Image (cartoon, rainbow, N blue to C red; front, side, top):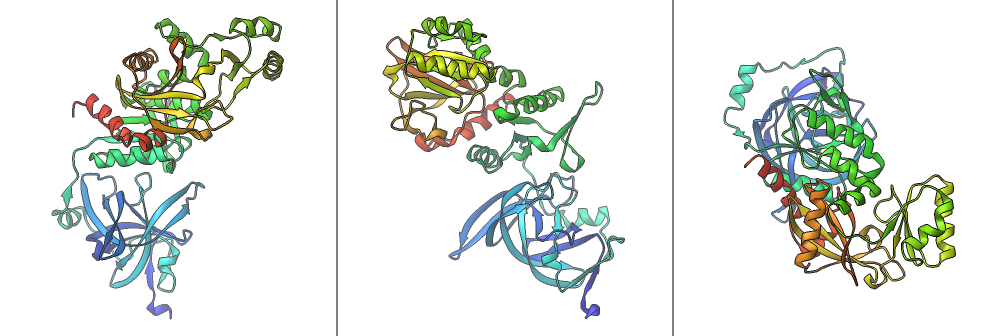
Length: 455
């Protein structure tokens, strides 16, 4: 029985004839259940009434110039959990593995392995019954010389000279993040998802660095798109500043994101630019509650947590007594709050203008659910196409400029006094606005980066 098994070291070279990959270095890992292959531009399609998937691969580690276009039968899509606990949806293909003189069919998941040491991971499911592993050895079946590699891949396509763009965010499965990755790849760029929590940095006057899981140094990016959750604003902006120190173009700067997350400061910046907002009050002591309520025109009024987002931490107080209770409750928790006049005539509606590089590229009207005053899509609000007025466009563009944001979601409310600015968001969601307008907003974000590089 042992004589029929292939003996492998911890690292081996193998090939995939059906995929057109003559040789690729693999990490042989019996601790991993599933095999995985490095893949970019992954896209499912139908071939002869069957599900297939096409993808690109840079088969040689640390070489992004050599690229092979592959396609294979699609057998599944499943959730794979990495050694760091990160969960990812992956396509699963079936193809034949050739290693030494042996050849057999295996299943592999497709994922971006740029941050890993190997383009290929051979897991125990693919080895079961066929392989014995000697972890102290490497390349028991031989390895190609640099000259051989060059000869084997001399006819492979050279990758297009697009940009290397990193999406700095938390969740690769979020609609907005998936769309940005897809839009960049569609326009010929090399896209990389960088999980904020898996980045760490080296502060050094002469050689600052950003490292990624596994110790990979992130030092060859042309541009970064920061999509930072409010809960990790501090660390996300620290990473963005580090990329800026490395002279990497950031679609929104760390300073712009930081000030946009401070509701009080951002309102002061907007007012300094001559932009009208609902009458707003801010105080540090519960003793000022009565006068604070009068200042904004009495009840009903809105109470907002300074750190709130997506409609969270926003309360409508319909009576003076309710307003006093809410304000004092927040104050007892040492929470910073804003008190704002309630625009009744808005009737639970607001306008979201998506501003990119000084232009309103799309706009929607958001309407709150019945019985709700907050129109946020995350809270069940609905989106519909709306034609914004020239004045509303002017306000949106002016607000993004005042906040120094190249990409901004600007929320405006229509009142009896005219349009009033509610808020400016530095990481606006794409799902509601793309779904309602059918516009490629993610593509416009990529175009803004291309414009900076004069592509």
